[in-house]
Amino acid sequence: MKKTLIKHIKTLYQVESEPREKVAGKDMATLPLIEDAYLAIEGDTIVDFGPMTDLHGVTNWNDLDVIDADGKMVLPAWCDSHTHIVFAKTREGEFVDRIKGLSYQEIAAKGGGILNSAKRLRETSEEDLFQSAMQRIKEMVRTGTGAIEVKSGYGLTVESELKMLRVAKRLKEEAPVAIKSTFLGAHAIPAEYKDNRKGYIDLIVNEMIPAVADEGLAEYIDIFCEQGYFTNEETDRVLEAGAKYGMIPKIHVNQFSNTGGVQTGIKHNARTVDHLEEMGKEEIEALLKSNTMPVSLPSCSFFLSIPYTPAREIIDAGLPLAIATDYNPGSTPSGNIPFLLSLACIKQKLTPEEAINAVTLNGAYAMGLEKTHGSIAVGKKANLIITKEMDDIALIPYAFGSEHIDQTILNGQIQ
Image (cartoon, rainbow, N blue to C red; front, side, top):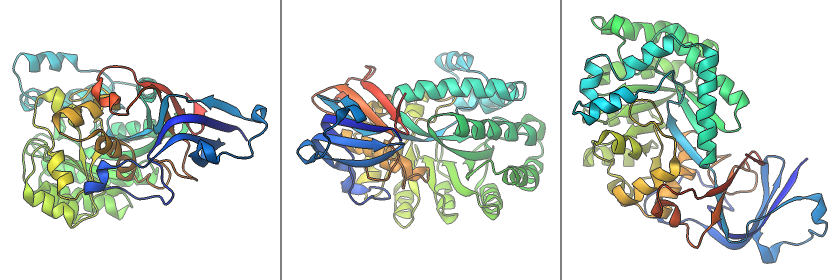
């Protein structure tokens, strides 16, 4: 079994002797660390770490792959808990429409947005979808991502939703990253059901969900609970139907309006509530009484010029927070988490430590991967980032747009 030793690490971050599920409130401002550290990997697993002064018994360096990280930082690889990376085509034409003044909702109303992606996806082969998604994953790995949640939702027919989730399943088998899949048939009402909303909900509940479950294609079920998309009552029905088949609820909510969707998600014990650009004290108070993780998608706010999730208020209230990319062709055509860290610090007033907690340990929790990913702990997967030489970890969000990742290690292998 391959053995790797990373030695002389300037600072080893997010270390845990007793692994935690997540981190919340004031604790998010702290990243446990070891200066001048080593980390040992056997196969795909972290087997030891500590200060260099505690490194004993390693006399035959020839038996190991040794990485000298002098002057460099090591962190757990990023965990991206919200993406739509299986899609057919980019939508740069809509980007230009927004520059000219059209809103996201106006573009959707004239057949753009999710329905545009759905039309193109139905015309694209499963193989082509797989190859393009794999290229996106490789791009994300280069910037330090080691775990990705993949949603469906651009099919909006039984056949095309299954096609997307089969691609996600193949990615799970062939990509180096950890992948969780989410069924999002309730992403939008397709054009053919424009005048028959109930008919489409019936299709999701009676045909899509059983078919997805029969093939074991999704761990999670999601819905876009938002004005112009799906109501709270429709959300109830879809999430209840998914739960009967063992799919854990997630929910897109409060992106453009506040209609009580956060509370609806909490009622269903949703693992996460995602977006939250429009939320108030009532939502924060409700989340404090739950185990649901709030998830912010700051690059979506950046790209659409909409408000940012009130991340500072969420953390100051004592809640945990995860941050994810929302990588998709319409509102966030990027999977670059270092850029998210910059947005979180600059636009949402998080400290670098809080932002890193949000994309490591809390990101892992948002995906149900907290026992294996998101921190440096014995027995966890050796999914790691080695930075370039730097004096302070704050350089990553500070010097936005620069390349700070020297190497990404996934399952013990340099990528």
